[in-house]
Image 1 (spheres, protein in one colour):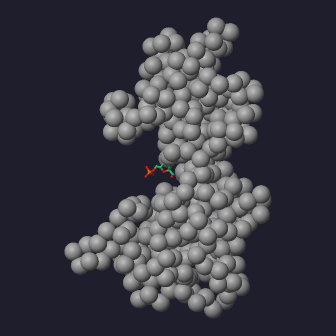
Image 2 (image 1 turned 135 degrees about the vertical axis):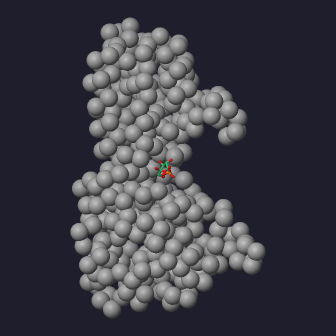
Image 3 (image 1 turned 90 degrees about the vertical axis):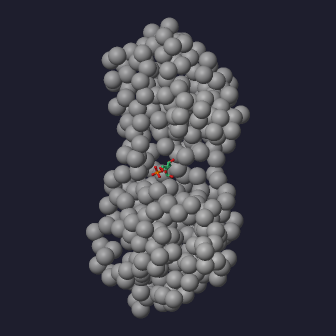
Length: 357
Ligand code: F6P
């Protein structure tokens, strides 16, 4: 059996731990199987960049961040676009899959990766997906690997911001990754003790945010910590088209700087922004992510053994299971307004910027 494996989209801690868990399962349970590393995600499948891996390649990588296979972003929109020879990237991938006599391909990635994996599966390739992302936005799984490590990093950021904010009596905005969803901001905001949490799923009112900052100031708490998702937006921005929004933000990709300026001018407090950026995706996976990654990776090996393709591995209510790729592709797992953590946050006085208690 010849198995291709690739990691696609933005990297995250835990990718190598999943690769290792999968490979060790395969070498132990299907000893005659061969594992082929596909370089830099779907780009390697499009260009036929394949490397035969040895058992020793999977040793010593459990605690290493990033991915030994390399990764790239290949926009889904371009997958079916034909070149001058009438061949699309999807056609090229299927051609390379067949030419290299792969029996299946294992794809580790986020929402976009799952959409392409589903296309490949529909085109006749055997595919097994694995849910990677710090954003935790993959539909059909309670958690994705990488999320918990990023949560620890963001929580530490918010912890550390507290002392400098308190010393200077400042309002500090910590901008947290997550693309269009607020999982990482919500969880790290609660875990780090933020006073205001702003997520894309709940558009905020800037005046409401200023009121909260002022109220805290008046009650003797001179500092305020705001955990703001990179995808957060004000109620006004939420009704705008993307180009209009960028113009309104004066070219800024995120709302953070605009809101910081608004707070400084309207609440009259010194305000700073902090952007941990790609630090949130770097370094060694947490013990939780190492365990989860090993579970998910070895379960993918079990699916291979059973010949159960066209699926992606998931964890639901602490049970490792799977979904059909076709059911996951194109869907996003957003934070519901009645999420338990939002309710808890509101019950202890955290503001979500919408004026609702
Ligand atoms: O999907 C992971 C993620 O880190 C998002 O949170 C963020 O919006 C995006 O990737 C950043 O992408 P890039 O690494 O391409 O700048």
